Image (tube, rainbow, N blue to C red):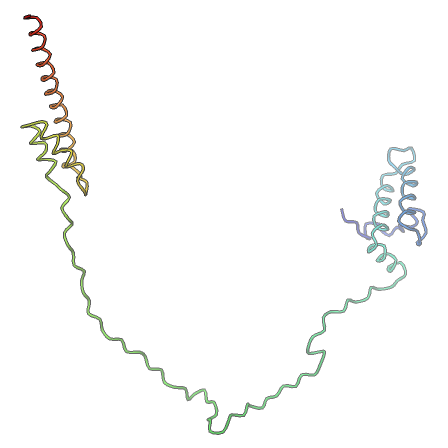
Length: 213
């Protein structure tokens, strides 16, 4: 907390601490501890208001700037004004020359009303060429449908066409993609049925041969 001289309320800090104006910081500290033993509120002779004034007096006298300011006030000496920066106008006399500048021979004097006339640039008209829209390349629409039809007639062939439709670039979209996926599933199911029938036929014939022997 910053102490101010006005917090002393007109009390002499030297008299409060019972020291002389020439006392050092060590003398002030020792005097503060000695007087505080008597003025502390916990003591029988203590006084809270006096304790506050003792703390303020110690802080003021231990601060070199506050102590110097208090000593000047006690002696009735006003603080010296702080010198500000010296301006160029105060450092030397500046002579303002109102004489217009001399122009070289053959050059006319400046006239603000005789400026060259602004000529806007001429822009050549440009012919607008509308963009040419080209149809998007074919995305293979229809191959998935053909794969589904082929799967209905021959499931393995439809499955192969469905795989080709899904792997083409660009990829199929919408109903074409759905038909291709169905054709692949249908073709795979038909292929499994064919393989199962073939395995059953082979094992059946092998079993019949062994049973006949």
